[in-house]
Length: 397
Image 1: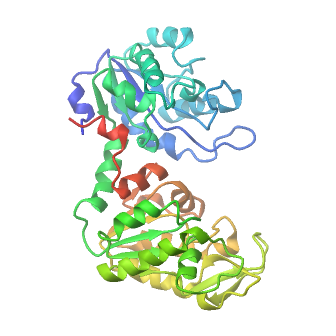
Image 2 (image 1 turned 180 degrees about the horizontal axis):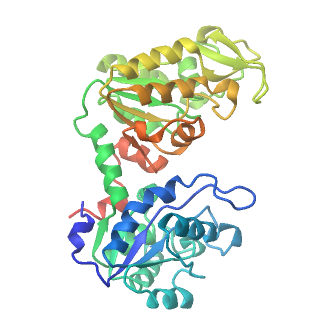
Image 3 (image 1 turned 60 degrees about the vertical axis):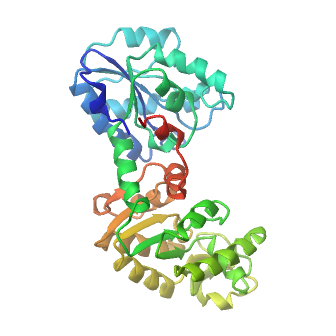
């Protein structure tokens, strides 16, 4: 994978950077978690220090090809200015007259942020020719391209994939670190290699479970998807989240894990409640005795301890997906236990973006205590599945 070093002297060069600034906003459009903006700083600072003229592109939300003020990158430009300690003007468009004017006005070591790339329907068009036309417009603003939005590298999009074919291109510091760290779990991982999978649906994780059944030593299952595995083992799950059309698949995974010598652990106890609510009364029951009128909303304490013990003696640990409804205090203990075990582990620990990364931050854990926290939920999952990521493949020699 080509790195920034391969681009040569960047002084005076226009460097078109694709970042991932898809940050959460509150109702007043204040950024509630600036983790993705902070993650972009090493690349941006390196380019600015090299005297480059930095043109940053990014998306926010899903405006679906329409200009919608509520998806403007204005809050991002303001926060980026604060973090860089330098003015970051926001262009009023992406490849229009204001973008060109602001890019032309850049001096060496200066930066501009283009407006939301998804305001243009061609950005993520399924028609190659439409994306390629937009990519030519991006290339008109650039001498070279740096891909640094890991959260979007699994997508064929004009500002991620197509533009990389038109000008000299390379991975930024963030994308390089992501691939380097995640590769420690996919290429000859140190063993024991343990993967903790949570989240609501088995169907979201089919590919990754399939791929890991002949790679991991242990798979620890939690979250809503655990109840489909419990059904596959013949247990009743009350009113818990379930995917009846995936029960046979879950049973097949349990069988295959046994054949391959992989320990596939599912919860032995569960925290249940009569309804999905923060104030619902929580009770711990055996997973084999979930009442018909109750739903499982977290793994139980015995399961949490067993999973923490498995993490403690592992050399490589990947976690993707919460163990329960961590946003509700009564059902956050399972997710908290996994985060704590990973923080305390001596092995190489990877938190696979998305809800898991949010849980680490929202539950008050020190991010620096984890070996790697990914900025891309979907991208990290597809990488662990062994899929080719278009935005990475295009940067390979």
